[in-house]
Image (cartoon, rainbow, N blue to C red; front, top):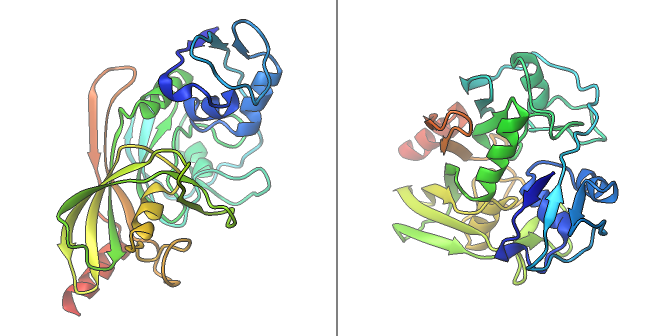
Length: 298
């Protein structure tokens, strides 16, 4: 059995919610099944999903790998930036969902990974093999994929501890006057729009650091560094301040056919197995560059 160290931020929170965050990528239903089956214990006792963690709790867990579904491999073009026996780094194209939902058979990044890579971690089993973290369907750029279970567990812990540096570039509507600033606003599920997140007073803390790269007449190109990794964090923070990302289908100001201009261009972390520093940077995708060129001549 493995032991989960009770950190200050876990106290007073539901155990299923904490493990969903700690074992990044596992579905909530699978976490709840682990609790129900006794794979997660508190003080050597079974607890319910809604158990509130206390400071002196001793929490132990045993990984239970979900059964693997028959997800078809697909020869989808994939830009593999780095690969070894434990992990891979890919540069995801726009319009590609990272993993399928249980109710859909749409081709996804997972299908492409199954075709191009010799192995994927099985910790997320069913529909998310190899997936340690995600970027949105319409977001492009760098993503870490776990090929071994050992790497998956260690990478998940690194992400939780903010030991993976991720930087993005985005083009937003509006003229941002500041050179650099940080957005520290809590995020939670939108009260009425269930597909959206929002800045909510009692939400989870979310911090985004912003640096202006270039200003246009009605747009600003920015670099963004994530201190936390909440769902839709960058998109929600910028939209809340009145600078929605160009092409954002959920938080933007209008529908734009060319795609969302948010790109994960830089990634740096310590390899969890070899301890070597890995640093990657990829250029903006073609549709992003074309839009900037259009602004340059307008």
